Length: 554
Image (cartoon, rainbow, N blue to C red; front, side):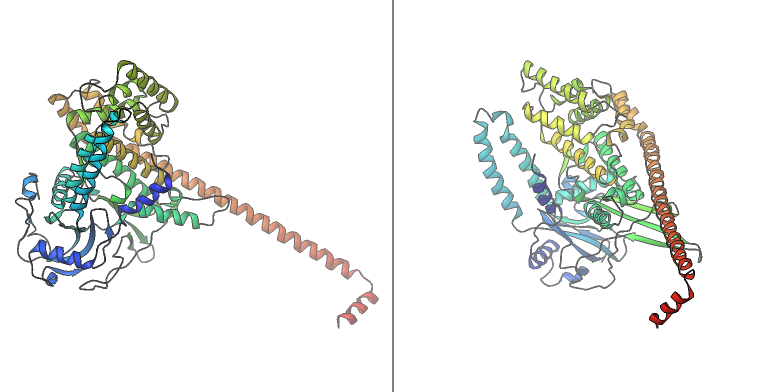
């Protein structure tokens, strides 16, 4: 939709948006905690003045919280959104009696006048959208209803207590997952969240760092990128867990994190190397420290660890442990049964290579029983969809470029003026973000093929009419652990093949090096023989000539 340079520039707003002043942070925290001015250290052991990240709604500071008593209380209305389950908030209270006395936390503070700016912006946008709805060529877009729906989403995102509720729901939904997590909110108000600090680095920064490492490598006649130098264990951690997260939220929870870009994905991993001589393990961990050591209670224990690159031989001799965390849950998509079924139907149609089925599903994306298109317009849309699938989408295990096909579907939606609701747009954009992540760290990993076990089983249990029954839904939910296990086996096989391929490439490089070494040796021996020949010619000269040579030499 937009030029690549513009998208690259706007991507900086994921975590590097302009930040507000320390005085505003300090004042907002004191008001939220109901403490007297200049008494922030009565609650925190230390509090970094410089934010570690800043987004469009709020910025994040790193701090160390002092635990006094059993619980922290909040003035927010989180109780209205609370979730039943282990560790859920009740009446704005989080039980932390089992936490240590000092705990590192992330403190998210809302920018000044954000709510007022959002309201004024959307009033202006609503006026323009209503005018566009009166223009015949633009009325099909229904901009008025779209702006209204988006305004509710943004208004909810500006209330940080709503984000705290979203985090509680996501933590409950993924409570049994080992390598996936979300921050746990400890305290929240509409302008402040105190949540557990998630160690790690943002996925986009990791990919950029390995792009830099690849560009700086000295490999001849080759331009290495992130996917060529990033350790396979790291790429496997990012991609497989990303796909699993998306499928769980879509197929099971019907509760989708609506901001799935790499700037909201944090990765924490460590390699353990065994020292053969001393029989001990050394761990190299990738972490991210505060970018500035200035705080109201400075601490000097932070250190910056550099990204590491390991060859395939070393990877096979070390242990690996890692986790993926999803942050910034201010925007979510709560899917109803029809929305979930319809989008899964589109993914299943992509897997089967059925363009007409995909067109019939997309025509239900407007959220109404009847489409806004006439019969002839529907037929034209279906024929174009069939042509797209014939050219680019042959189904599972046919090397389908998932991102290219989904982009083509969205293009046809725009060309044929098919109306879709905001939740469908969110699901599509999240899928494209996930595919883009996979393309950068593991280009040969096919997101559609990786999702095949779950999508096909869902289609088999629910049926082509995509109507859920309680019995079928229960059977599908019971099979979920086995389906994820099947996906895991397939993923392990894929990355094992990638490891073998890297080893093969290393052997080829070593062969080339041996050829160069042999060539150099041959040249050296040849030069020696040639020089020996010159010596023999010189020794055959007459004694007089040799004497003359020696005199001149003297």
